[in-house]
Image (cartoon, rainbow, N blue to C red; front, side, top):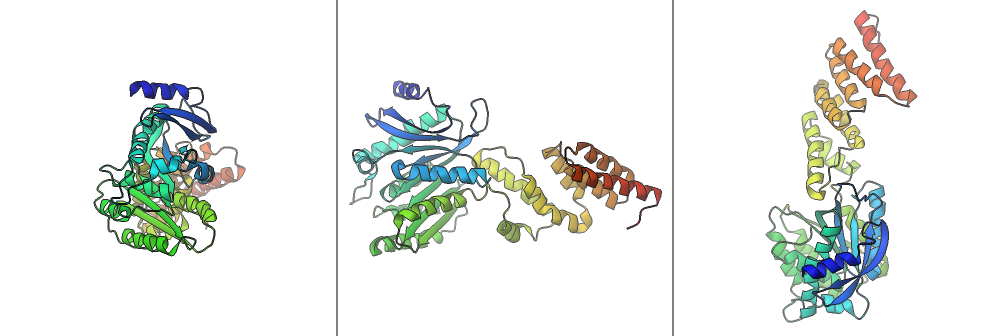
Length: 390
């Protein structure tokens, strides 16, 4: 087994640190054949960096890989998701997808060749990714129709191999919906994301199965299970693939994105200043926990709760807010501004002047900001001299 993995790694040693998309064949001891992979390494990946990246495995890569990668790049560029390392498995040659992913009708178990493919993904493919790339513990798997059923076997095992599952128009084995329901009901300490798409383009029989599955999964009361589904009222199943791969990533990586208008309205707006600060800190603790990335609190999220800190409880938490920002962005004048405002509001003008001067010294290459910070200094000096008027 070790020899097979060594040979596998050697076969990819020339390009494993390349960025962009490339295709490689790997030899599998488990499958006793070679398989073709498509690999995407994001632009931000650097060999000498310590940053880790979520891993996504795309089945049916012949059809789904480029679409998934395009959406992943777009979400990352707009800071709606972390950059991902994406590995696709081509399955449309030699009827591979049927050998890889078919099931027994009488018991819904994977056929013998599909069980080997499960082992290939769990053992050889994971080992390759872990040994050659800085991948985090957040793993996503994507499948379509037959392969969308197959990804369920990774969910219902004792310890799910993936964190997120994207099932496009799944053609479920008879017992799979019930097995998924039983599994997610019992999840403990492990967050699982499951996205399911369906549409009017499917047969009435398949629609009935998928709608029943949606009803079961929607009614599960387990905070560790996150579920989202889409039903597309259109004739084109092909068009739904692009829509599904975009909407599924928006769902899975929602907590990574900056505070949206909806999140602010429903979760933040009514909070007290200390609770708003705690909410912001906890949001980024969760991001670090889920995606294994040390992401600093975004400045736009700081501005999102600024109004709460300034307007509620007489600005009593401006100092705490400013100190938090100073720890995150010591070169920014913003923390000094909030602490200075805290002391000015409390009549401690000497301390206010100290922080406003410190903030002014950090302003760089922005005349408008420099003028604003100098006005803070002038205002406090006038107050000290008794010449300040509103």
